[in-house]
Length: 288
Ligand SMILES: Nc1ncnc2c1ncn2[C@@H]1O[C@H](COP(=O)(O)OP(=O)(O)O)[C@@H](O)[C@H]1O
Ligand SMILES: [Mg+2]
Image (cartoon, rainbow, N blue to C red; front, side, top):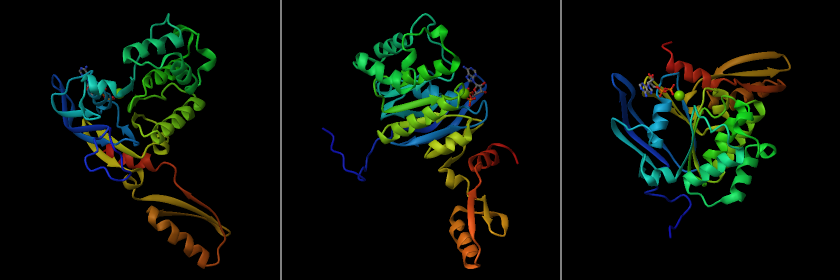
């Protein structure tokens, strides 16, 4: 039996461990030395322009694409091995379920593929979790794209995987569906699972992810917490005598507000700008 001591984990195996990964498709170098780690209980956003290599990285982790060089491990197992697959749940960017199956049958099918013994209880729980309880018996060909994406997320969670990889899970979702995904990802974190989330919706990534990895032309252009990446940003301060915008690091904000208060100003609002990740992202991926 494994003994777990909080805060003491000298040789803790990372949920995802990618080291100097390369992948070439003929002359196209999709990945050129990518390294990253995702720990249990961590949600990491995978960002980058179209063609940066996000889906290729995800496919290597799932064992769908063989790397040209470097290593990729899932819960300590080589990507693509039985052990790696057993600890991984995956929603592909592009997927199609058999149109004649019902929602419940799709989940049952994936239970079989994953060797899950969760049975009817697991199906009901997952279908309910993605807000599809009312449509459990509906056929795939009668579902909207957004409903199919919800089903795709349910399918990724079959068998309680310790590592969950979601490639653009919210692209077809309405605002309610997006919120559902945010809450779900937060729940997965609390349960100590690891999540790698690829998305173009930076505000969403900023809300839900602990860290981000930004790919650009097959390389890591930047990584870390949003606060770390967006070192400078603007803060709008609204006082009794007007509105002022400051360029300030996060650490400068308390002093800034204290200054207003010392001068006898009434401070009504302190608004950090909402697109910090977008700014940091564009700085890293554009040549500006
Ligand atoms: N099966 C493949 N054969 C040839 N080139 C591919 C294949 N898959 C991806 N690529 C190329 O690899 C690069 C990275 O693609 P991809 O990983 O899909 O990027 P992203 O998901 O970030 O948009 C692109 O130039 C793409 O055209
Ligand atoms: Mg992609």
